[in-house]
Length: 439
Image (cartoon, rainbow, N blue to C red; front, side, top):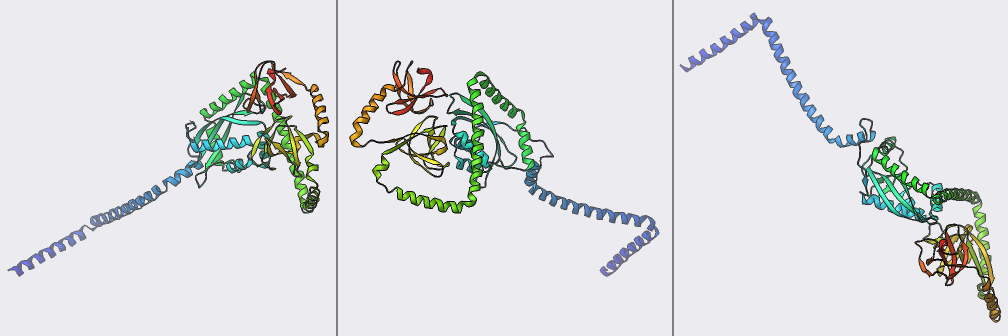
């Protein structure tokens, strides 16, 4: 029974297949295109799925490199405008600290510090900084305005400063722009050697934004109004610029001459050593003979007083025009050792002139010399104080106060200076009072 049923079923399936084959054969012109279309659709679906998978993988790879592409896009900068960045005031402590150190080094003529902050300072600018420092007392005010730079860790800094000159009482405003970067150790430095056109274009565009232009104009107006209201300042700045240019030119000429002499340095060194040996033998003469000679020198220009015979040595102070010092030694390297505040110090010899060379008297002649000096005191020139005035150690209102001179008091006059100060003798030492208060 079951076998019969199974056999009948198989026959039925076979009959149906035969019927389908016969139908397909009879309708081949219709059925074959349909089958072909189904196959094509199937193939297209497979291809679409494959493309979707590839697209997903490509999108994932693109996502991983989005940050890199954004950085490149920012640097290449041609595809989008520079953003309108906010001008922030004193917003970054690291940048403020950098600018404070830099301006302090400028005031002190500290070239080593300047170079450590800005490695792109050339030899001419080094000389100019050192010459200018002779006339700068300090930068008592610094305000740093910043915008973020074109790369990570970079800034555009616009520094508003007020400078106190040694020969002028009022503070003079100014502004300077800097491109600041951060090194691999996280330290900020001034980058004046950037030559990437994309970066320089970015800096230019940001510096032309309205808030930066407004800041520049504000400082320019303040500076110009100060010049218009103070003819003395105007004349001082013109004279200062001329003095600096002359000093820089002379220094460059000396450096060039020194370079020429360096070609024969070996022979010169031998000659110097021989001369020093000879001088050393001469120095063995009795000490009392040398101790009896005292030389006095006078300062001919504003100049730094340093702890050793080097332009990079610590600055102990500033000598004003007309200051006099005891000369201890005139060295062959262009420096002179002097006595300053009871200790040895050094000044460039080119800024000194000899005033006198005195030989101390023998013991038995002391009384005669004392009498002669006493007699000559009648010829001392004095000035009279017309209003109570402070007596200071240097020609500056911030100089150390030595005492107070009262109306009617007479002070021994050394010289009246063109900078508005009068040099006097006070308790055996050189001092200064404002010229307006004496006659």
